[in-house]
Length: 143
Length: 119
Image (cartoon, rainbow over all chains, first blue to last red; front, side, top):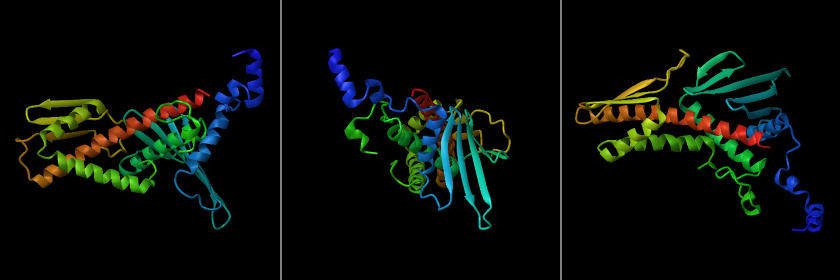
């Protein structure tokens, strides 16, 4: 492709880099905020007045954060960390209670992690979660 | 399956576990596949005459109620009622399922993190 044609195409569609990596100007923190918004919506409707976030903090940690106002208009906050260890997933709620997840709670968390990955891969990074390949226009609308 | 509400997926998974435990009874081929799968998920699977011990990695936090070892006695040495045998298989299946879920969560978390860093 000639340079002139490349420049023309770039003017019409944006640079090749912009097309392939539309979020490259976002910091890791901003990406986490985008992911957290999607993550918070995975567990059904969010009650009015609540703010819910669920996100992957790093390669070993997930966070559930929820804020709301109670009947006395007092702000309530619950923060839960899930730490992934080789021998289990440790849950720490408001930095106090530690226990390994099991049974339904473990199953629900893993399902949420699976759904989170599928949703952010498609919704933010525009990747097929199964192949890691960029989504085509036809596959992007199947989310 | 991923499009179902989480509660419905859990119901399906529980049914799946129960069904598999029931099917494995009196089915040597499925039993072999089951323990082959166990060997890929657990830290150790020890087989001795008529008995199989499955070990998960040690759990350092004593509050956990998850068993770290279960045993299964192979037929024909297994001399208890079929119902008890089914319950034992369900327990083993649950044990393996837990190990599998933790591994899946670990794998996906690493991918999510790498995907973010790639941007």
